[in-house]
Image 1 (cartoon, helix red, strand yellow):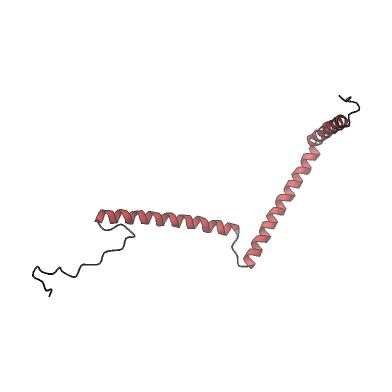
Image 2 (cartoon, one colour):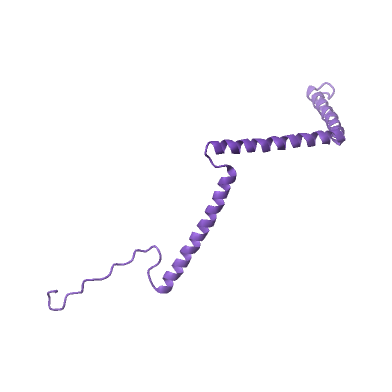
Length: 126
């Protein structure tokens, strides 16, 4: 077995472990300071403002290209779901009405009226 002092892997692991401890201690001290939290708040505000401005520019671009925006597409999808629900309700009501009247179920082709009469027993039809 090799000696831990002369083992390069053990020395490397110890050095990395010490670096992690020092970095964690430094980061903890930095994050506890009020300056850090103020800087993070400013950065978050700037990012939110930039995102809002980008969204507005994209909306203007889509309008100029005569394309719907995400908000408009969401509105269309919601209206379409409402319409599909209403169509489903109408179909079920028509099916119930059809069943109540004794007619063929909705969607089945109606039978044509019977115009021919069967021939009499003797033979010739008039």
